[in-house]
Amino acid sequence: MRVLLVILTFLSLNSVHALEIDEKLTLRFLKVSNSKKTVLINRGAEDGLAVGDHAKFFITSGVIARGVVEKVSPSRSIWSLYRVVEPAEVTDGKVLNLKIASPVKITDDPSKSMKDEPIPGGSDKMGMNDGAAEEGAASKINEDEQKELEGMGLEESAKPAKKEAPVKSNKSNKSNEPKEVSMMEDAPIRGGANTSKNWEVWGTIYLNALSGTVDNGTTSTTATSTETKASSVDLSAGIERYFLASDSFLKNTSLTIFVHKRTLESSSSDKLGIDWFEFGGGVNYHFYNSAATTNNIIGFGGVNLGAGNATISTTTNGVSNSIKGTNTFFSVGVGAKYVLSNGFGVRALFDYYSSNESYTVDAVTSTRKLSGPRVLFGISYRF
Image (cartoon, helix red, strand yellow):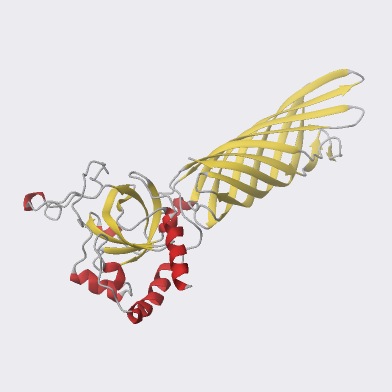
């Protein structure tokens, strides 16, 4: 039975599509060894990583390290960093990106050794012309790193990716297994895999219940059901910009711009129609899971401001008339997003909306104020 489970697990892990050269992932360093030559990250076989994969780790300023996968679990992997450009950036909890790369071509010529010619931070442009590595290159772990791994409870990860290690007794394997599972699976990270895509287009449909007052320039009255009380379906479309590579609070912040169209028509004997066209912008902050999370719920809150125009059309006894005006608005709300690995997603939002409209007819200015709750549902695409 145990053999069958092992076989099924192996097949499931290998069924994941392997990452190709130049493919990118957003990740986090969960644990870094004292020498900064071995790291544990929150990406694994489920994300397409496999033992022997080489990659460049980079932030906005440039490449900070290169490494090779030594051990993989479904959601975690252990890397041996054979080139560290920016040691100060290799720290526990660091959020950054990796780019799958060709293995580094090594040489015995000291004048061409990477160790003798350290590259300043950010100077590595991530060119993909490194060439093929020799068998086992950049995947060896020295005795000091082996001792550090043993201190981390990850001694099995010290095996070179290309070599076969001596077979350990069942007793030894069993004693090491719980430590590895605890380290690899219990790290405090909520959510699924991450995306590095910083742009998103979205569209939403609104269900609202707005009410307010009308001021005709001389008196102010409470809205009636045919004048200013509206229950309608509205549409919006916009584009959102994320800052996922940032190391500050901006990594969970996004900016958005949008257009909004809504129409109201009464069913009374005197036909009344109101058309609004609004445009605006806003800011969202993602407080439950990272804004880069995929395949899991992302909670967020947002504030929007904008302006637009409104047109009131009336038809009485077959005679039509229209009045044009301007309006300003704001909204504040909370909601949730769910983004798939392929970039498509859905969102829902509950907010409070308030607008002020102004109309001038025959030198008399009247105002209309509307406010109330709205429920929004929409779809999106990250790219």
